[in-house]
Amino acid sequence: MNIYTADETKKEARNAPAEDVVRHDAEPVNSAKIRKPLYEARKKIFPKRAEGRFRQFKWIVMLVTLGIYYLGPWIRWDRGSFAPDQAILIDLAHRRFYFFFIEIWPQEFFFVAGLLVMAGFGLFLITSAVGRAWCGYTCPQTVWVDLFLVVERFIEGDRNQRIKLDKAPWSFEKVWKRVSKHAIWLAIGVSTGGAWIFYFADAPQLLLDLWTFQAPAVAYMTIGILTGTTYVFGGLMREQVCTYMCPWPRIQGAMLDENSLTVTYNDWRGEPRTHGTKKAASEGKVAGDCVDCNACVVVCPMGIDIRDGQQLECITCALCIDACDGVMDKLGRDKGLISYATLADYNANMALATGNGAHAINPNIVRDADGHFHDKVKHFNWKIIFRARTLLYMGVWAAVGIGLLVALLSRDRLEVNVLHDRNPQFVMESDGSIRNGFTVRILNMIPEPRVINLSIDGLEGATMKINGMDQPDSRSFDIPADPDKAVTLKVYVTVPRNQLHDDEQHFRFVAEDKSSNEHDVYKAVFNAPADVKNREHH
Image (cartoon, rainbow, N blue to C red; front, side, top):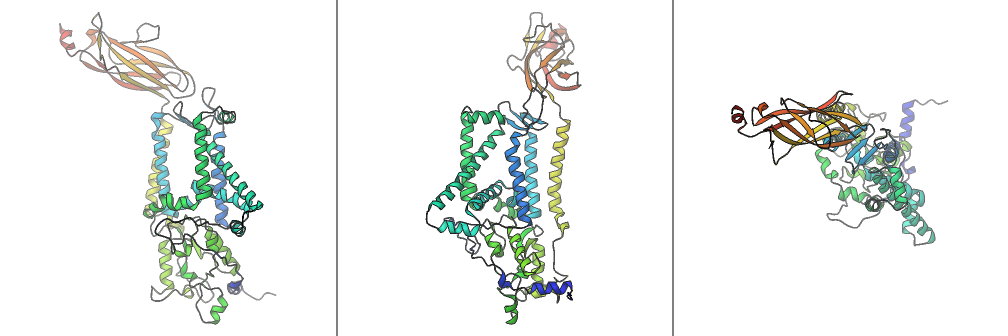
């Protein structure tokens, strides 16, 4: 019969021998302690596969993001017989952008600009709240490096096997493994470049043209460039892209404050490190929770030791949290030796463990006699995310999004633009009437044919004549408009002399689809001779 209470059982577990923990021979090659002031040759990193909740979340993010990227061009969306049926399409030839039911024309580029603004403020919001979560989970460099590592582990094995293979002399086994790995990497690069160009043309037709070597040369060039960059960045350079090429690690400092969550080694409970808790206790030494197993180092894709503190190279992927939590589980100790924490909480706990700096870290101070954390120990409170800074970013982000949504739902799909002839600005006809020339452009912005009525509003006595239309002069004309296209007309407006009262008179061109009551108006000016008033009196 078990006569121990739950607290006693946990206390016994906390005394589990740390000697049973596997210790890894790993050097943090990008550690802040040994970082060189200038660039030096890259030291290879062989990250061990991590297991845990953050690693699982990264798998999900990788599958979702890669799935969207590779499958996006193949999603179909029925827009009728007069428009492409590709759901996501950047049609450069016709200057259109299609996204499911949304169609963006060149003059509506402010929608794209608005999305970029939202992306910027969204990045500020995420960084101020949870640090470099973008870098650790959804950055393309991180996602593709994860994919390349999956291939590498599948062919060459996990960390120790890859290190052994790298040091081994060249043999048939080493050659075929390396050739296979790099061949698959190149295939991923080709598929990455191919997926990119499919967003700019009908994907099935372009794939057929590529296969039969009938695609434009720029398509092959784009695939070649993206294949090379994907292969080099994701397979060969890896962490160097984040360290040396990406500007975001250097910008993020302005986005963080003392209440931002970052991956943190809680040395207030981990120091001093020891390989054996019982041995340290028998010698009367203070021992922290860290057993110096280097598990956090071997899983880091950036080759750093998180125990050195915040570093430029850290992408906040949290794999070190998974590795450390696994070790703490084996030892029966509380998880969170490495955790997401704010600087404010860390400083408060450090002050508690050091007596406000009066002595070295004593992790026993932060626990009570039963081994539980003291009530004064600060833990993460999700409410800290909703503070002035993040609310400001969230407010701007939401305001831009709502503005774009309102503009999208209220926009007209019919536009009329008018350009007055510059030379001559007016012509006097034989009967004394005055004629002005205009170039009128009617935009039918839906993928359906329709008839647009173009009329004049104002300018009493004026009539229109349209080149190419065999109809008598009138104040309105029915113009057939092709689907999703612009109709350009040469329009002449004529006004009898006795109807002119000034050398400049304002009127309006009105374009209207009477079947849908959709219309657009353009305010124009009719020019006449400067002495039109005097001539009228004579």
